Image (tube, rainbow, N blue to C red; front, side, top):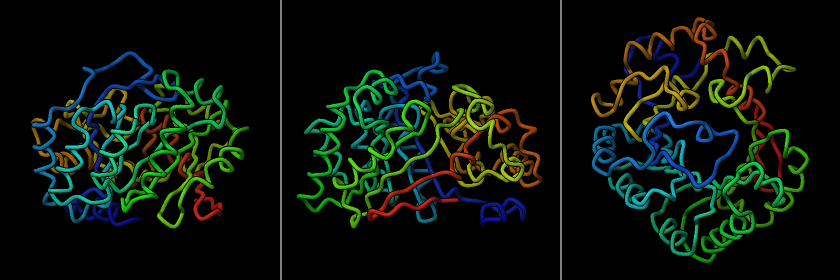
Length: 320
């Protein structure tokens, strides 16, 4: 049992280890493993800067306890006209270890320079193949050559300067790209600076709460009783605010937010995170009864996390 799970058992106030703000609900790609490929469930576009600042301000007193901040969700951050200002504002308010995730198709020279200038600690590049055919079939709407070129140029800009940003090349494993993983590692490893914290990471696609696939399709051959009973770290450690202010239960609840616990437009996010609704769900997890929640019953996040493969300093280690 981790600290946040102990907090739930004791009934004390908790602070999320990971705080995520979806700054824009829109993307230039249409990936089959992403819920953005489904009919929209809310208005597309960026979160207003006023709402963003209000959310950041009420969370600022907890910035020293929050270990990681993600400024992305169901959307492409580089479509957000305020993304660089948002990073700067969060840093001004005391938040550290900020990350964005991008498909890199829009990461032109101007945006590369502006992004690195913010001092953002981590930039995750979503690249799902080592060939044009595979990558563009998984991520329709982007151009493979441009993506790879933009990633390489950003890495070089960082290496030629004093910017502190580390880069993570992320590969989401699925049936159509499994045969490219070895070549993928061989291609990207020489381009990264592992001494600067760069990584290559791979994990299996998730069901998005059963919205883009099903547990039967993804893990039918490896259902594990212990995983099915284990509490999920997502509901204990991660607080997410969507672009319209909705606070979903977890990352898998973002497509339709059926288990949303409130709105940051009406209630401080930290209060929602400590609400009775959240605590009741955590209790089910602690009691080994999470599969009574249909969303959790279809979730494969813990299976995916159990098979994460990380390449750092030319070594491979499996996180189990």
